[in-house]
Each structure stands twice: as C-alpha cells, then as structure tokens.
Length: 187
Image (cartoon, rainbow, N blue to C red; front, side):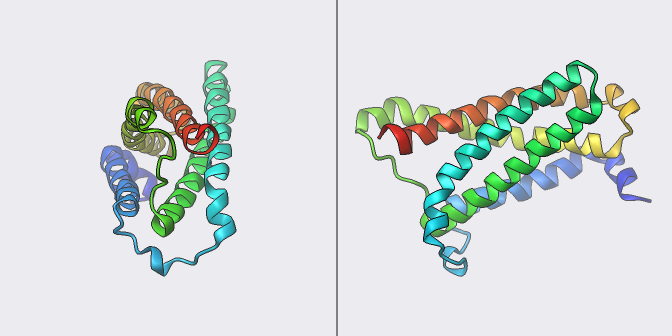
C-alpha cells in the first residue's frame, strides 16, 4: 500500500501523531526538557530570532489570507501553493523559536506588573491556546490534502477543517505579533 493510501485510510491518526510530536517539541523546549547545552550558541541569531519570527508571522498572515482568497476564487493550485508556503513559514518559525527557547529560555516580560497581568498574560494565553489547537487542525487539513485528489477534497472534512484552521491560525499569528510588540517594541 502506498503512503497516500495509508494516510487516506487514517488521516486523523497521521494528524494526531504529527501534532503530538510537534507539541512535545514545543512544550519540551519551553519546560527545559530539550537540552539547550547541546545546541550551538549563535548570539547574533539568538538576538535576531524574535524579529525574524515576527517577519515570518507577517508573511504567514499574508499567505493565509491570499490562500483563502485563492480557494474562494476556485484557484486550487494557488491555494495549495500558498497554504504550503504558510506551513513552511510556520515550520521555520517553530525551528527558530525552539532553538531560542532551548538555548535561552522564554523571554521575560520587561514591562510593569499591571501590564503583565492585565494585558500580556491574557494575550499570551489566548495565543498559546490557539496555537495548540491549530496544530492538529492544520495537520489534519494537510493530511487530507495530501491523501486525496483535488476532485475528492470537497467531499472530505478538508474544507470545514481548513476554514477553522485558517481562521484560528490568523488570530494566533496576529496575537503572536501582539506578544512580540509587548516584549520587544512597547516595553
């Protein structure tokens, strides 16, 4: 049986496995389980990661919006290319984020306590929750898109899950930019 057929038979299981691996890496890095000492320390890159990730997030927002517009116009090839570009931007974001967090740990909030409690923590919490929810949704939409010919996709959960994933991904990326602004621009 070929890979596509296996994914077609079990898209939820494939998405769940990919999601668990990705989330385990993220939470492992954030909680200190990923050995930062084993990674090379490149100070210029570590300093640049937040700014690079903000640019990647802006790019991802643009590609998600353009991808949604493309599918609404019926341009499946452009939609596919844009959503794969979004996935690549997110993957690069994730690699850079994991590197920085594993080596330096999460960025401390530099602003006043009131801003931390009333603004930063709520924005960060919603961002993190949406990011965690998005991972399996995006993985499932990608598994379906990989496993099925384009003509079959409307009969799958891909359109429904894809809409939810795109919406939540946009909000998560936007809130990630708000977190960036609070950490690096406002305070």
